[in-house]
Length: 469
Image (cartoon, rainbow, N blue to C red; front, side, top):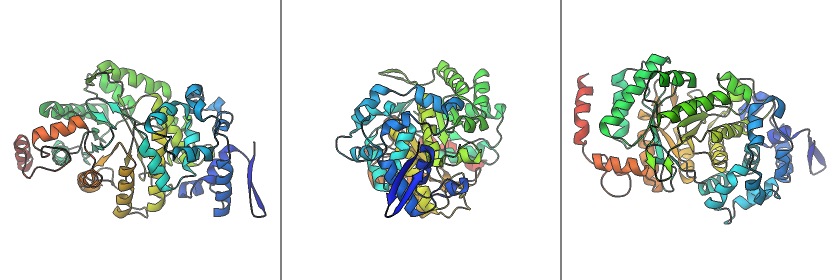
């Protein structure tokens, strides 16, 4: 099916829904690299106008990636909830944007609609939105998940404490871990990217983290960000696995390039659930045992984008995540590099788009607000994105010593950044973690995230050992 829109005397025609979506996407370097970007601002505007007039139901009749050859497309369409979609089935993409900005679109209503949205629908809406639209609509969406703590509550923003070390040295990891805890970081997860990615090392790191969490009684969860097959082997060896990590993509071929498929993710989730390591809550034992990371450009870098724009494919990854009921999902927005998001402007837009799309789909979205050292971006750009995401209700961000990951060699957000954002916007840590911080003397009693003036007694022996090592 073709789509068209006329601007002045010129008629712009788009040969497919895939092409229409790509041409309507705000400019980014990855789409230029793929050869799918609009040739001019006029063509982009024409595509956006045509997209605004498109009925939402069209996305159920024309797949941007073929149903017959792609497992992600089959997952999206086979699990679509027609009853949840019914209240908005009569709308166009432009109508949906206008309705989402209205007072009628509240958190309860959006949560009920989430199973009826396909990722292509929400990606289409995002292409018509300004940054303020993306933030305002996403703020209305609340996705609450639980393991040992509760993530995603209104007025709360969690952090992933990321104590990576270039040699996985125990003392180096411990120093970063202590630094983060003393700044109120770690309520989303304490997650390590291992420098030496093999099963024995994964088991050793998991045991170390489990020992720290158990010794101090920290209401958080640990994760070693290794390949899902390594985690399955670690579970088989009796390792204390809280969350199963995996990078995922929005097409079957992208996931194949990661060495995974949907059946493998289902197997890993079942294995993690069988350990029953999550805390009990009023609504039963927690089912949120997965941690996924995504990023615009991964499908293109794998040659698996099927001629689609990278933002639409990214949104499709959230459909994969949603199916497995994760505790955490984050877009590592600027990590892949300037070939895909060239500068701070493109990274800021992409981060807000990803958060918006994930939240509308019912995914517990966080963001690694980051850039590589060869991108045209700096810490001012990250401050802008961090502040916008905080206002938009982002579930969690990263906490890294000095914002500089010395193992992965990229720039992210620091423990201090999270404190600033919490103080600036009146945000607080996850309730169970906040209570622990106050009980341990890290935070002063009362609401908020005010650090106590002195080193808490419980941590003094740890600091002494680190100084002596």
